[in-house]
Every structure is written in C-alpha cells, then in structure tokens.
Amino acid sequence: MNKIWDSEGYSLNFDFVFKYGRGVLDLLEKDGVKSILDLGCGTGVLTNFLADEGYQVLGMDSSSEMLEKARRDFPAINFIEADAANFELVNPVDAVFSNAVLHWIERDKQVDMMKCVYRALVPGGQFVFEMGGKGNNRLIHTLMEELFARRGYKYEAPFYFPSIGEYATLLESVGFDVRYAILFDRPTPLKGENGLADWLRMFQNLQLSQLSIRDREEIIFETVNTLKPELYSHGVWYSDYVRLRVRAVKKI
Image (cartoon, rainbow, N blue to C red; front, side, top):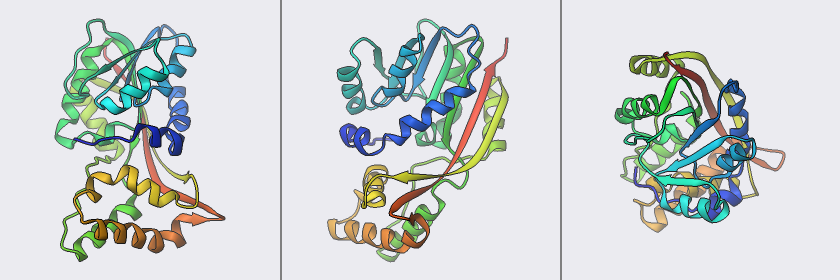
C-alpha cells in the first residue's frame, strides 16, 4: 500500500488512535515481558508509552513521514523503516504489539506478515493487536462505493476486515495459539464540526485522489450529508468502527 501520511494532521485530529491503543495493552500478560516491537508504530506515541512503562522498545513502520515525526518527538527510541510483511529482527522480542495497522495490509500478504511476527518472537512470545474487523466502517464504505459508481469510478477499499474465525485460522496456520479474540462495535467520536469530512480526507485519500477535484469534493459532501442522521449525534461526528482484538502466543 503506497499511502502518503499527513503525520502532523494525524497526530492533531486523530489522537483517538493512540488513546484506544493503550487498551490493547491490557491483553498483554506482562510477566517476563521485557522487550516489545511496536509494529506499525506511526508517530511513536504508543512506542514512547511502552518505553515509559519500562519496556525495551523498538518502533517499526513503513511510512517515512510517520517515522520522521516519531524520531523528532522521541529521539531516545530506536525506530526503523520496514515492511510489516517482509522484515527480520536481529534479536527476537518477548512481545509484538500492533494497533490500528494490520487491516492496511493486503489479504494476500497477511500470512507473510504473521510469519515475520512469528520469527520475531521468542518461544512463548505474545502477539497482541487491534485492527479493523468484519463490518468496520460498513456505512461509509457502502455509500462511497455507490457514489463512486454513479460517476463511473470503481471504489476499491485498500483494507482487510476479517472475522474472528477467518483471522484465527490464519494465525493458527502459521503456528500461533490464539488465546483471546473479540469482535466488537466501537462507534468512535471524531474531532470538530467537520469530523467526518476530515476523516475521509485522512483515511480515504488513496481512493479520493484518483478523482477529479470536483468529484472528490462532491463525494465528500454527499457522504457527510447522507450519513449525518446515523453518524452525527449531539454535535459530535462518529465513525462506525468495528474492532478485532486478539492475543496469540508463539508455541514453545
């Protein structure tokens, strides 16, 4: 996925990603865990949180824009640029943590990513993560597909939102034991009166960038107005998130 991120805008308007990510850490069984890889670390906020908690941390991301900000904000932490589906660590870690990243990896590269994570872990090491799950942003994606088609475009969402069964099966095929998995609705508040429009420009820019400026702005306008009855409440915009949280363990 060749997405260029606005790292400053991401940190300013979508800090809910980091805040919800701290809850994912509750899945981690902390006894004996000293070293953690933050896979898809973005701007490094959660990597720094892990460092403050006393862990030896390594941040990894494929976005040079995100890593530039991470290194600037947290110079004491080691960040590396690498593809989540094609990496190796010199020294294996006790845990791999990932938040709001894995759904950006193409379906046909998911097993490659899992194999990389498996190799990166010590025996008994933990893989804890949250990602978009089945039904994530269904209202938004369904409407945008319709609006694209009306204008002669094909809408292809670059996301993979699996069910529990589907994803657990993939993890087990690599050798993981899946110890915990939950799929749940999490309507997520967005910042500001233009919250949904800003969300579309940040997270749907790959699809929107293929359109003319006029079509792009029309689709954003129509999406916002059509979904307002369902995604706007008491002065706050929401995104219709469905999340998948999992804890898997590398077999000893």
